[in-house]
Amino acid sequence: MNETEGIADSKHDLEALNRFTSGRWLWNERQQLSCRYVKFDLSTLLQLAASAIGSRSCTQVLKISEGQYNKVFQLTMDDGREVIAKLPNPNAGRPHFTTASEVATMDFLKNVLNLPVPKVYAWSSRASENPLGAEYILMEKQAGVVLTDVWGTIKGKQKVQLLDQVIDIERRLAATIFSRFGSLYYKDDLPDNSDSTSSLYLDSTGNKVQSEIFGIGPTNHRSFFDFGRGELDIERGPWSTVTEFMTTIARREIATAKSGLKYPLMPEGLFYGPRQYQPSLSKKLSALENYLKVAPHVLPENKATHASVLWHGDLHSQNIFVDQEDPSRIVGIIDWQSVSACPLFMQVGRPAFLDYNGPVPEGLGKVPLPPSFDSMDLGEQQKARALHRAQTLHNLYLVRCLQFNETVFQAIQGQNTLRHQVSVVPGLVLMDYEPLLNNLLRDVEKEWAHIAAVGGDGISPGRPFPLHFSDEEIQQQERDGELWAQGVELMDTFVGDTGCFKHWDGRVSNADYERSRRELDEGVKRFLDREARNDEERREWLKALPFVD
Image 1 (cartoon, helix red, strand yellow):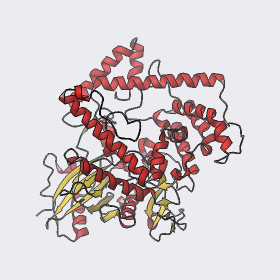
Image 2: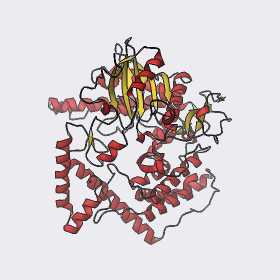
Image 3: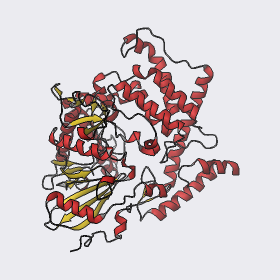
Image 4: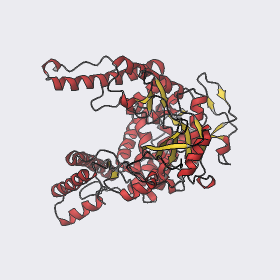
């Protein structure tokens, strides 16, 4: 049988395997498609896969996933065995480093930490040096079924059992503390200037562990590459201290602002338009340079949360596989691409498979049903019960963290503190968060006496606050903050009015495209009719709206 026969991709021709075919974009579509186009030789891919597991030939190819950053194919061999082929898109990250680190990370997680991670059969991070003409990873097909398929039908007790397994996985990740901040690689793939002689990590008992196999090298964290940052000449580590890492993030944003890059996706707020907040280079640089003057002194107080750890930041139900016969048992976790060793406090949060729409319970106690539950109709009661179950799982996650993973619990609880927020917001300045950063820095000034009195973080007790804001600067910052909040509210109103947004970057299904396109166009027209006072303002808004090509 010809190796390219039997392609189970009946809706598309062979060339469609190279392209993104799982949806459309409501704006910026040409660029979105371009950064997801991967040219490769299909016959070679099939030969590589068959050879990797000792089969004679591949008889079927199925494109099973097209996420943000990869193409994933299920390859079935003549003997019935199946292999997963993962090819990174151009937008996945830095060539070579992203793939090399992903493979090493999966190896470490599977064979050192004993986490349920697929086995890699073969891989290449050098597209120009392999016959496929693209980077690739060939791995075992994950056993089980995706959690998405069973979550709605499994019992509450089974969900609790799954939750406990996630807690244990996170406990093992949090207990493995790396000596540096960056990404994990095989030592052979580290750049020549990397220091691979120091201990790699502290294990759960606090013992230093050397490794002949692995080392920490430059980061592959997406925030250093997405939205044009990959083209910038900026520092990407590795770093020896959390302070070096945090200050590099601010310098990264300074370089990003100076390069003129703008956030191309759905923004936090509608800025730049008439009578709205006007982001500018000078405002961004001022906020970031001020932050750098206090950065070493305002890290979260709990130093245990500064630890460099690996973390799965996208633990949604599509990335978790469970046993088909016993769906309370996790058998695999996938998608470890671009996972980096970063400070714990920057990474933790409620796992995405527990997300829900609704308020977060005020305490960690038992979540009650609404007082008016008995007077609700059947439909309202069903919604109330669904929210009650979700809130109960949320609280149970935090309680279990407190019991078995206390540092993670403390990191999550610390996310609402000033010192956490002023440490993470500088990394969001590309998204025009500088008014919020300025507001946080003024709050730091109010708390400075306490911060300096403690005498920690390198501050001598009584040291004066290193920033000075004039009355005029404060008035401008406060006004910008008000306009920023106004823009966020305007964006929320716009999204609610149009009804066409299903994804944060404007992606919709092929079937929904025409309707969503019409809804967006009509929504823009209504917005302009409401907000533009004259033709000139109409033109200014059309220029400012990010989702108008």
